[in-house]
Amino acid sequence: MFVGSQVVGAKIVTNSKAPGAQCFGLVTMSTSEEAAKCISHLHRTELHGRTITVDRVTEIPLFILIAS
Image (spheres, rainbow, N blue to C red):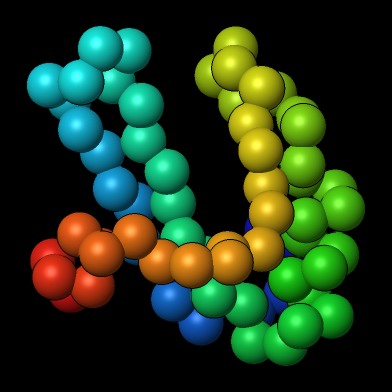
């Protein structure tokens, strides 16, 4: 992410059978301040030709909890 930032955990979820093969990731940072810095630097930036959205999770989808 950034020099000095510490990622505590990450999970990438994909569905290759869905149209457009959309995916998303859940990243846990070591502090709320580091998370806020990453959000402010990465939100609405381009990754592999696509604009990404980076935001705080308000709820975790049920299938993530089941698959964990």
